[in-house]
Length: 431
Image 1: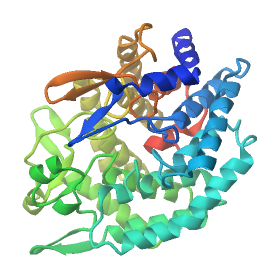
Image 2 (image 1 turned 90 degrees about the vertical axis):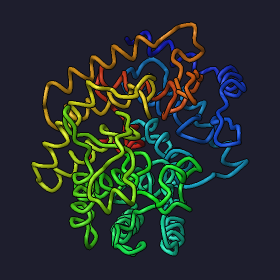
Image 3 (image 1 turned 180 degrees about the vertical axis):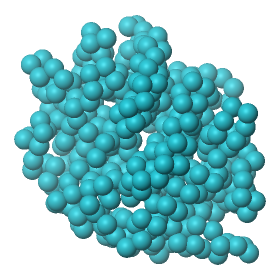
Image 4 (image 1 turned 45 degrees about the horizontal axis):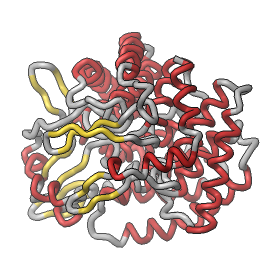
């Protein structure tokens, strides 16, 4: 296992070759009418910060093998890119929070990159208030205002690594989340403020699917991320007024809108406005992934249950995750976001939080399944697999979210236990 991980990690250190492959048109994706290249040098999702996080973890696992030097080469390139082009946002997966996290992973426990990290934190601290003021003025949120990928939940997950230095920024985000959870009037009823109206849908497909709007319950773009941030902050003794009530409100919403059938209880991806009015879910579309479906939701409820000492949340989370870890519905890629690595990692976190051995066994079995996707002929050892309009497509990606870095970090963590906080990118870190 170590040989596999290290061989692939060495391949990823050839910058020019890596760039040539990721920039090949075969790795472009279609979103609506546009074709885009997901690779972005400064993004944790698809770029160099993901490789820095990987080399940081390898350097902690195997300190005498020079992985920190490989990571440093990419950190220098990140610095050059920021100097030339600035940075795109404050976010975790495409912005400064993700770059900061990559540096933390390479920092040898905070001994290196101190000025770089401090500068990033200062910029986030200076700008987060302005960002939240803008978000508060909006009558309804967009998912990427508050989510784990692009929004305040992801930024907060990073800032919680620095509770002494950046308490003000964290508190502003917590207050925003609590305020967002207040009721709003929509049509003839009151709904929680995390309701997304149709005009704020991410895509035309979403607008057609949920013409009256929806509540997103996926960890990547929905309310489980808010729940985890509030719980982790509480555990770190950072409180704002209404925090406990907000935790309960978010958790109760997720408890209420489970799907129940002969196999047990699990979660879908969205709750429509009609389903909210009826008080139950009719649409059973789901997948068993980190991004959407039971694993992400169950993890958020597990953390909420432990935070509020609510056994019903914990029991529901455990039974849902046991089902998902065996069912693996709509899971066919080895990657993290919507593939086997994400489920494997969440199983391992469930084991760490509950000490239930079934979850450790499931995590180890899933790692074996991930390894079956390895092919030494592939440029990066693994390919991301997508189902696009009925046809299967294969992509060579290096990033954390659906690339090889996320897969290798998962394998390392389950084999050896993790030594750097890369998993706070996915809001899965123990605090």
